[in-house]
Figure: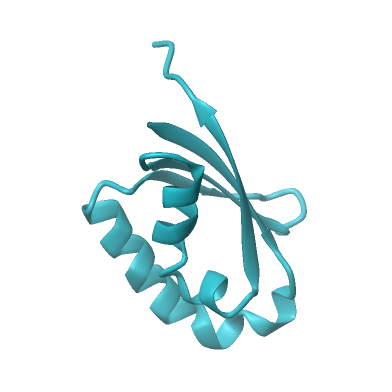
Length: 86
């Protein structure tokens, strides 16, 4: 199942020390096929959008829980199942 994941930073000023590890885990999740695509919000920098493959929203939450920003409470996600049209 594909899900649209909307991520919001809870404390943007605190994410710096986690960014290197965050990008490493993002690359791992991408290689595993969990993260299909990821986009940074340019207008205000307040979060990210992703297309995630998982069994259901609970599974997506668990898989993205490996991200250091999620594990440390600095990034939260909402998931909406989506279907590709083209």
